Amino acid sequence: MCQLTLNQEIYFLGQTWNMTKMNIFMIKDRRHQLIEQIKQSIKKTQRHKIIKIKETAALIGRLNFLRTQFKEASLYLMLIDSAKTRAVKTQGWTGMTVSLQEALKELYWWIKKKAENKKQQIQDPIPQATIVTDASPKGWGQYWNQILERFQQLMEHSQATRYIGQVI
Image 1: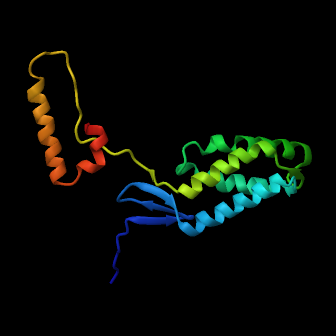
Image 2: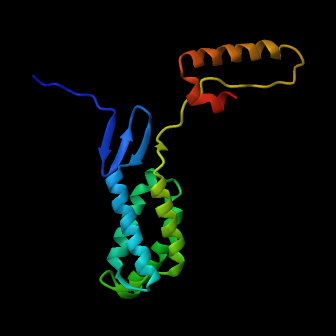
Image 3: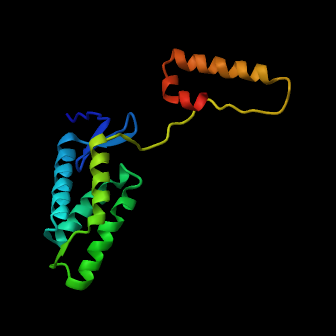
């Protein structure tokens, strides 16, 4: 007999996709591993150490993978990626390079974001109520009472806490 177990959380490449709450975040072990790799890159950059171009490309790939969790991720890879591209053009993939000091700002941003590890919504919540205004001097009170009644119904079913910013 075959038995299926429904699971609302999917663990995929170091990230947890929660399908009930519709959010995504990085698991603790993977997050600590990535933060350590970023810190090593910061130390090498601060000390003007020579690093392999492939090592820089690998870090860019790991960080680029997080675009699903951080929408602005690509913006904070531009300096590192452009320096890597210039180094590849002059030395090839087997070459060595020194990281730019300007890239430190981007690396520190990544550490800050990974330390927070905020859950990213996969899908925007569907609003349960919409407030519409008009210029009519009468009739508004009746419409407002309907909105308040709907809001109270949501509160009774404990749904309103998810959508309170959209109701008020």
